Length: 420
Image 1: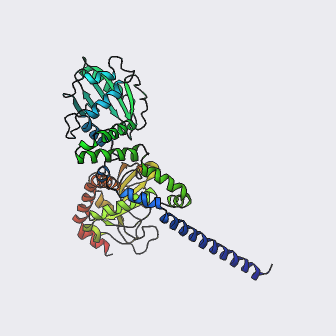
Image 2: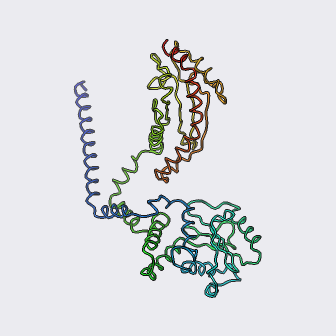
Image 3: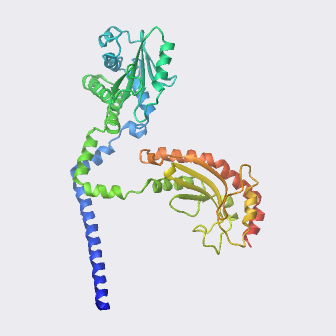
């Protein structure tokens, strides 16, 4: 085979690859246009934009907020003006269980519920209903798992503190599953029952309810069905859209930014908001300086092993998703032979808690580890994620200040070292 024939085949191969790439891009565009033309997509978009007080306040995924709202509904003296309507339905469901031999659902009708006490987080119990002769201990598990001895501990507490009452327990979960540890004492109740009860109240008493209360209850049932039960209309609509546009949605999901990139971007934004200055960047590292020491840091002129911007010193945050860990460090990079790295290190060693580093090239005089569950990034809303990042920044801020103060203290010497 002659050389020009080989060359022609290579050219044909490149042309075919280019043509296939163009076809793939056009197919992706066509699929996207089909999605935009789908009426169900418009309905989903419109539905997600409907205001919901629990989403606005960002409390739909917070277990303790669910308990707070339920305690409000269960309190006959609550500002909802429902009286004991919801409380009665709840107690009937609990006492219908064969687990509690000394009380029956029909007993609810003869109870004086006007003096019921509803306690939140009493001795760490999610909800405690204190009736005239009965105690109802409610453990609410929306997103967290059951601890091994948790229910046993609560059961012993109510038996000791209320020895003359009938003791009953409720294990409230999305699916109404039994407790793994206290099956005889805790009746499983599902959030589906909560939704059905509240929807029944809206249906029967809706006209007489305070409009604001009606809105709260409606928003709450919506958020339970969407976030906990995965059964609201928008969830069903999203499943339909997915089946009709599976190829496009799978492609988008496959190529979404990973958690490390997303977290890193948010960390940089919050770092900037504190007035800290971004340094050399890479995927798993966020590096920075502060304004007072920016001009004290030597920039290497002839080094191939350092950072991209050639800084001799940076604060460094390393993201380690495999270990669910974030590490904060002070780091001196490999530097030009003419720069006095040993003196910079000696200055840092004047700070209490700093140590001589391991290794020969990258010199770390201080590090601090923080547990961070990278798998939770998807489930956290942006505000909670930013709060978590700022909590971490608050922890490292004292060290940043100590380094800043120490370098400023030696500013004259550092400027002379920098000018060599």
